[in-house]
Image (cartoon, one colour):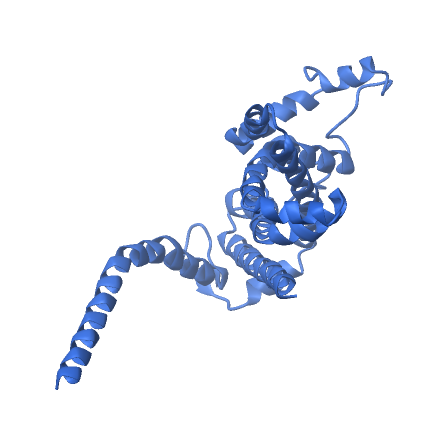
Length: 302
């Protein structure tokens, strides 16, 4: 009887805890539902309708998706966005990791370096883009004059006037803007690695490169995963930097997927088309993050 009573008390206590957990999680669930689930459902519904700005929407099924996947402008935007994402993610991660290693190994002035590298991250992306637009300007910008003074160029550089120049100039600005932020994340991961591990490697005679590839990178893998997910997601959703620096030019060579969605929704007022594009981008983001995390998890297991 005593064991039965004890069992009932444990069961009632467990039920009370479950009820309490449900009650405490209800506000967060309501917020998520109102701010994410409901808008997502509305977005999917809009993408399956022909919804004029003025008038009643009509259901068209998957016709919008067939249309956007045959749109050459949207396909070009996808290709450019993927190219930009690959370049930015690789270079930004490498620069941020280099800065984190520099700050970690600097004995004097590490606080100053950390602040100096992180300072651009406190600036809004649109503001940073405006700043670099002024720097790239041949009328008021100092970059071309500086290169000419150093004897590196004979005439002003048209930084944003060619497709490749516009791409790489934007990548440079993005690295300057975000490298300090990712450096802080990676520095946190580096400082979590025990010093005893490095001491053991030093005793075994491991050099810098062997220590970096055999100890630092494997133990930093979870932090690198976070940086990669943030970088890929941010690059796939790139908008402000190209809107300010290039306006999609020259000759629509720097139009991103989000720029295309913005044009369809707020210039052409084709809400259904923009909604279908947004759903495609959302699916691509989810798949990209799943693939990234799966590859990193497999690396951890191996």
